[in-house]
Image (cartoon, rainbow, N blue to C red; front, top):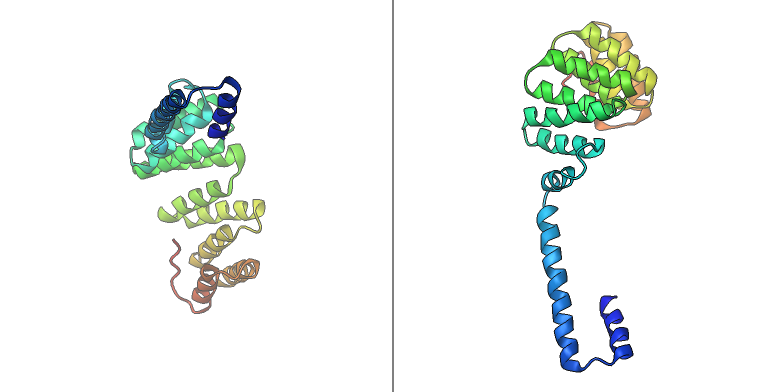
Length: 212
């Protein structure tokens, strides 16, 4: 460690004890000040990213991360500026498109939310893209559109249970109970989670399904 290196150095040049103590104190103070400064910069993700983006303003990841911090803080317009910049720097990063959709959704602009969730699917076909777009259609009462999205998602990710359960939900609310039962049963067989059991039970008993 640092003290070991100092001991070797002292042995080589034969520093006097009083001088050695003063030297150690100076070194400790320097490292303490540096640690305090770093801690101030890194106290939160937001302060870290705003600090770093000054010298790396065209870094796609920093723009996305800073946008995400602002999104989580409810500063949607500010977040959108960074997501848009990140998507210009590298349009292939699907997460920025999804986050733009999420920001517009939080602002109540469902049309633009739909646009960017669809863009995320076009760019990278992420599980989250199918889920968010399908949920948006359910919220708008567009069950046929939701079913189509979830069908596409399940085709891409046949083992992802959330998409299976949302597809079962869509079929059930479109009055296709038998098909919904088949999908819910398969979802439960994929993984016997409480959520899958809940959906399967509700369909079996002709009860309303409430998915989070």
